[in-house]
Image 1 (spheres, rainbow, N blue to C red):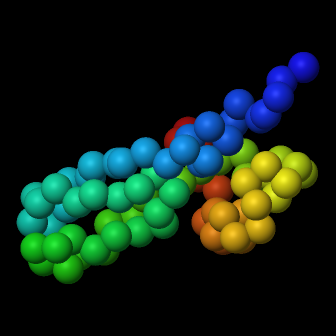
Image 2 (image 1 turned 180 degrees about the vertical axis):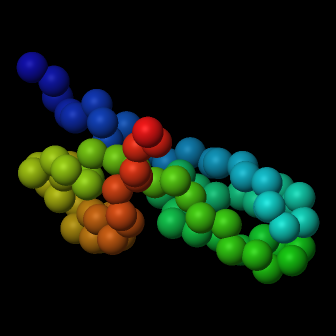
Length: 82
């Protein structure tokens, strides 16, 4: 039996994510739980690909807490490429 859900490791311990702005090429920093960030150079909005077990697990609210649950649940699940 696990002490905690292994799926929440990247949610409960956020990581820095670097993305390249598609408009100007500037590096934009996002935290792995951020939904979006604006480029400091040109203002373009970059969206983060946040897909997690929060979208489908019935115990997610208990694992991550109400605030983070509500924020992540608002993100539509990622669609698989066919």
